[in-house]
Image 1 (cartoon, rainbow, N blue to C red):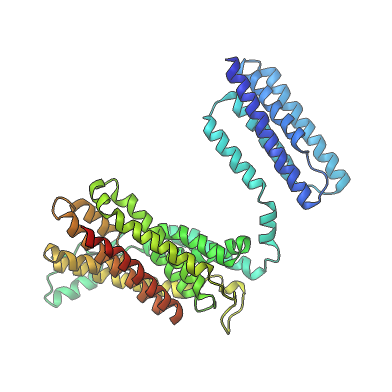
Image 2: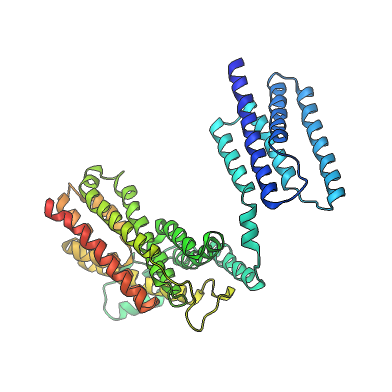
Length: 441
């Protein structure tokens, strides 16, 4: 019992010292005065929390509550005194002191797993260290920018939740169903055809506009180009198509097309990584067969994105545009792309019904215009059983080619010609390199 308790007390002291180091560093960088204290003070605060934990652990609740009460009283007194002298009544340091005290308490009580306590502490220190960054972000923020963020919050947090999460089918639209009947069209096989899911379609709008918004925020913190790259990579795991279209739209406003293309390639690289998660649990054997092609795609995409992101370019805005908040995101182009996606999805699903299993490759290629996740899952389920590994790989390369070319076509519609051409060449390079593996199997 004693060695474990001693280990926890020492760990509490280390946590307190780390928090004190962060607070001391913050005061030095900001050339400020006041605050709760530095390394020694926060080490003692964490130690007090640990001592209170020891009392509670051994059922000395009165002593434990006494330590907690004494600490809170001392902290309140310090807050009043500091505020009275400096006329500044911020509570960041006081909250950090309370957090450090309870971290020490939790470490000793061990009522939650130590890993979680450590994770909470790391996040706590990280948030505390963001002050200079958040100050930089908020510096000079305009009313129009605030309105833009509120508009996005309405789009993402108000509009989307109220939309029905239901896939409307042909039979749910009586006039369309009756019209097709009057044209002697056999509607039985189309009755279950999903036409539109309002919430999922709106999710595309949220993603496209969200990439612009979060890219803008990260751009204020790490620079415009770095923010675009980081946001696009994360968005690629959700929807590389949406990420690409958002960057294509931005290419009409900004003159640094090379960096936008690099970010778009990075978003697609993230989608290649996602294939491991889709195929691995379903068909590990087929995953081994396609790993070389995937790794080639990832490697080539990485080289291309680094090349474009490192290419020197002037960070300017296209003629007729200015850096105002209203240009943080544009709802119109996102709605147009969502409408185009609805049409493409309906057409591809109709083609799947018409072609059926007899036109497996044709139907898969057509369906890839709307995305390849479902096709990859289907191939993983069939590879080695219904179809051979090589045929499955060939089909995968074909649908991937069609999917990437469709993104290039969307980019041509949404972005400027330079962006569309560079992105198209990049996708051709990725697909061409991935097909090399066919020679060796």
